[in-house]
Length: 355
Image (cartoon, rainbow, N blue to C red):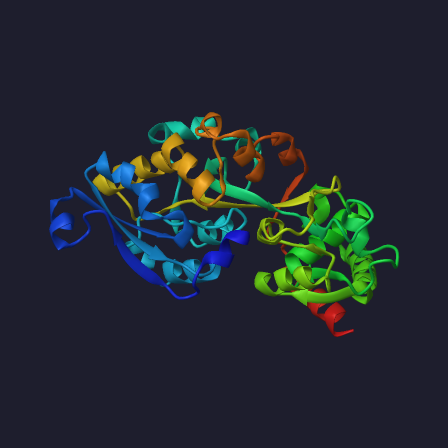
């Protein structure tokens, strides 16, 4: 989720490489990729274009919902590659918008980390429609100079010492997931919670609200609250940790053993892509999962690719920064899913906030 910090909410279309009319006329295959701006930087993609007979146009998105709406409204006929969240792929498959990934044409997919090979997200009837692309975590970030010890999720529900100095993101899905992890609700039940379990969640969320300084929406606002000391601990994206650490503050990042919320975006191919365009798309997908792109993403993002293709070419410091130095962090990942009763989750969340 932290990658969205760097995006503009409006759509923007650009051409890459020799993408003027002349360049496009010379290319055998012309592809359009709808994606996040930070994934499609020119220098990330130029090595692929230099070695292929492809022209690539990029259309930037501001939200997952925007991307889905455009495809469902008929955009799938002109788009060759998209970047849905791992937990959002089911929306596309339910609307019959995607085709399965042809793994024979994507050999670098053999290098997917085991966590991504095992997940059932992005799949329907055993076939993969959204292949994991890049990922990260949403941890607890805290002022190490203003807290006695590394926190876990219990800091948001127990004790009084940090009352009024805690912050939680204003997002029902993640907020209720955190309460469920604190309560010890098993992962295989978390997104299928019954009325009794949701009542327990509501009870602890009411306690949590009494301890919060704020529910945050803007990561910039949260960063400022950390800087002033008004907030000492928050469920956060990663950027405040590095931003404030670089400014000399003693920051900490905690990955609770009860579970860490992981995020992952995928690459997916709309259903209507066929023939030479389809072959070119899978050639591009293979590049995006390969070592050249992975190394550029690791240092330029910095983000972790879903495969190990570039891992040995990344120094230890950068590996640690993008969470691939110690892959055991994935053992505690809880991937976001779409609860069947999500409307009830949102109603519960809003009721807590309004109390």
